[in-house]
Image 1 (cartoon, helix red, strand yellow):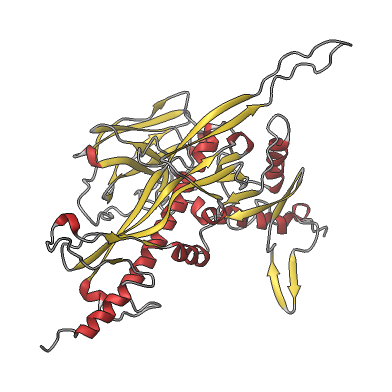
Image 2: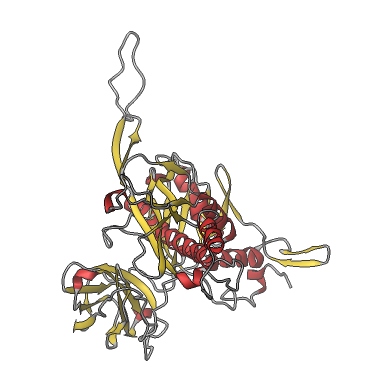
Length: 479
């Protein structure tokens, strides 16, 4: 019959589905001459370790994930012991014939819960049978590649920023784990300097921390700021000429610590891709539904001791809020403008039509005296536990600022407990589509948070350069 594939064509198609980067389902082999649900052949997941390595090496914006040591986990909860100290610091001297006082080390048992990540994709049967335009002529292989990249990008983001107090299914990212250990500084929007970073390296290596950082992770904008400073403040010419090619700034930047140079690494996902507010009419719910929130109660800003608003922040602000749930991100809602003065706190209440489907809220704040919240920047994520959620803004997180991380990638300091590497598992077909899951099981563990450091609210100087760029002394140009 015209239009139907031949048996040879179907055989070739099934063969292609059973090799390469595509998962497959084994042929049905009824047991006992009866075909029942109990003896249908299973769907076979395919290991995608090779795809994973290709994706990480080709996706240059992934920095943290490739550097993390991977340790195989054998259970859904991984326990390890942390040495808090080697004993008391009393005098070690004894008199002749005497006996030393008993001393003991102090240990802490720490547990890390394995978390589960997945990306669901599908390709229609029709698309899987035709060639497509692009690097791969196979639609299933192409969608697998795109899904892998999407999952790895979101993994990278959450390795930095995830917080299980806001999403119960998430792990704690390394920022949360180090911050809980107490090693946090706040630049309040000021630009960091190489001298400042060097001082933190010295403090970490000093007693009683003895922390030896191997890398400093910054956002691309902060690295550009540091390179700019090396050019403007350098005592030597930072414009390099090699074989007729002119290079501005340093190709590789390191900060010298008490034990040697520490490389500064630019990590694009340290600066969140969702830091800019979505448009009012946009959402990303592709399957199911997620009701948009509404502003239920809005109060004027009131004085509060916890406020970090200063006189320079005095003005009117508009907040934009989106709900995040299992099905995606809702359409945003805006508050009315709120007038804020130094030392005041902003609070407003968000109501949810169906709060059970909402995990947390992303809250964005506009620029001062802006007429709309378009382009507003992320300030906080707030957990949702009831129909009404109270949002509080004390200016603890400065919009547009970012973190700087002082890390050691030795497995003794930090690792990723991996229960399942990236795999693809086909799902049961109930229509003329080929659905599948990309899955990863694991969680990061910062074993020694007191030996690492987080600097929050790091900013950059104006794009025109230093504040007094025409000052000859500042530039080191004695003219």
